[in-house]
Amino acid sequence: MNAADPPDSGPDQDAEAEYWEQPRRLAEWHTLTPAERELAWARLRHWVAWLHDRYELSIEERLPHCWAEHPGLIEELWALKAWREEIYEAADPSGQAARYWHAELRQTIHAALTFYAAGCRSGHRAGTPATGQLQQRWAQADPLAGIPPRLLAAHTHQPPADSDLFRTDATMQRELRRGLAQPLSDTIGDCVHHDGSWWTAAEAGWLRVTDTRLAEVLTDSAAKLAQADTHVAKRNKIRTLLNDDTTHNDAIQNEAPANDAAPRDAISDGPTRDDGTTREGS
Image (tube, rainbow, N blue to C red; front, top):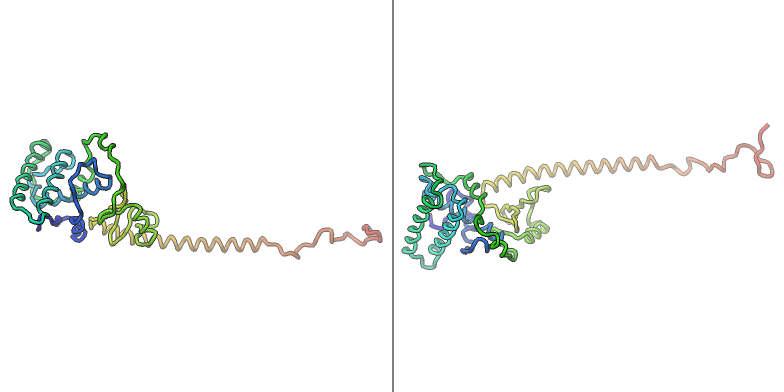
């Protein structure tokens, strides 16, 4: 496996290839836009899952499972990821630089066990891949933990641009109007199928679903919901036709013919006299 390859236990390889091709940069977390921060956090978790499996870090929990809950470890791994990408993606990669990186990796793992998470170890375990439950736990952590609120509040940004993993809300709404994107169902609009992938609504736009298992669940759910929507539409159409027919029949029954009743003053009570008054019968 190439050093930049996605993890074997991760999402679909084609989707992952798109992931790795995205531009990356090292930045302070509080200077990123909400969308950039969400993408950066997802990429870091994804990369750590690869690191976890590639370097057998599950053995004796060399990488504590709670790394995502230690702000210092987030920063260490964030920098380690950026450095590796600089080395391995250079026009002329340096073997010496790669050796330095691996030495720093060992230092980071040592710091994780003895400094950042010294009290978090739970004993020896056989090497296992990063499970979905474990990665979900990482996803629930906050990469901004420990950053002063004044730094977070000091940065306002323009909306992010579209990318292979992100769509702005304006873009997605335009695609929905054009029929190039379809919601999960008529009543569920926070999951959309577009450009061959599922997308979920995020804080500042839409994120591509790269987990193939989740994508399969969404595809299966969309098919079932489409059947249900079709059934409901047919039932509503029949109900509308029945209501229209009932209204039409009621209108016919309530309509009185013009010759059903004669004017009251046209009916005389008996013979009349020459002066026009009624003459009573004898």
